[in-house]
Length: 443
Image (cartoon, rainbow, N blue to C red; front, side):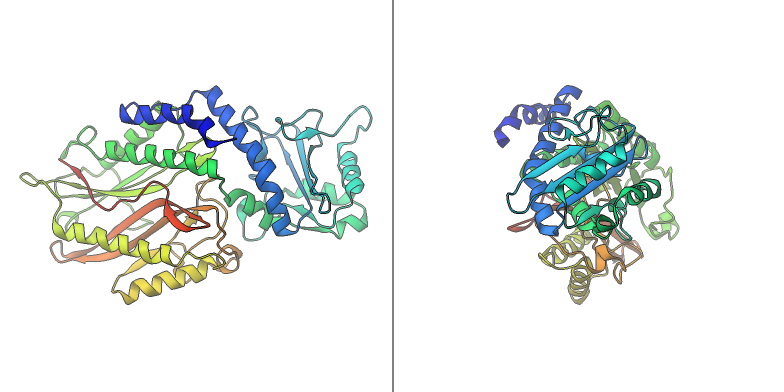
């Protein structure tokens, strides 16, 4: 569907942002958009991915409340869970280009996945699945099991064993891991999804700006925990969801903070926010089956100040330089570890003290795809998603990283921690909705 058909929905969001109300779509409109995007993905994206990965048949099986995380993305908006045992079969016929989208169920699954089981004619659901497989005689049958890509490892042991017990020996030999296909499906963003994602990031940025303002923070009174729960409540009030609990933390001079350096595993809670503090948040929202993930910084002005100290402004610029080194190294075909090594090497050569832990973003917050470091694995990720899985165009990432900066004025190191949504497309990298290049100021 042309992007112009989404404009009324977008105007609702944009008008809300301009008016500070930040309205989002009602549930019925959300369902319409979700189902339209799913149909586009099934019709246009899935055949391309099956051709790219050489899997002509993909079988997904889940039971209610124990859903494969990939299968969940094929359910229509009105299906909040699988029903009983849900079986999906996708078949790509190489010669004709035919694409079968079938459900071994008594009813269609949405508009695109058609029921292919008459229980009265064949009471055994497993046997019907095997009959459909045999009728198409696929060369490679992809199942969702994977050692390294957790999201692509959703087929449970019971269903795997049941399928293997029904499949004839000739077809058991054709079973392969569908991890590349599953990851491709999860990581790839369509043009329409990226239009939506830009607005989601804009909403995320606006919530952060409001949270880091005098509307929410009274220095000397408000605590970091207060701000966290304000953000959580704001999301709920807007009719949205968070995929993780927001965090807010403080960095300040060594004397004021008694030498504490921000630690990923030891973050102090419920600290009273004071003038002169450097605030940091980690925050993301879920909406229309997409997710955001953002970290930004704010400075609490001291009496008489109208801007942040130059040493903090310069520290933020160092964080932006690390971002630039990372995104310059994001090139099609490179693995996550190759991108990580190139970016870290260039940043260190420039005199920076970086750490990079960038992850795919979109269908899930910590999504599947090319993993570019982890905060506790700066030598590289010793798994397929870091070692072998390459960067593909049409994918989105949380550009997440930090650089350590020594501040003589504070007699201590601080970490400049940043995270912004980015998109790697056919024309290279771009930020989805800009990035922070100036500290937010709290009077």
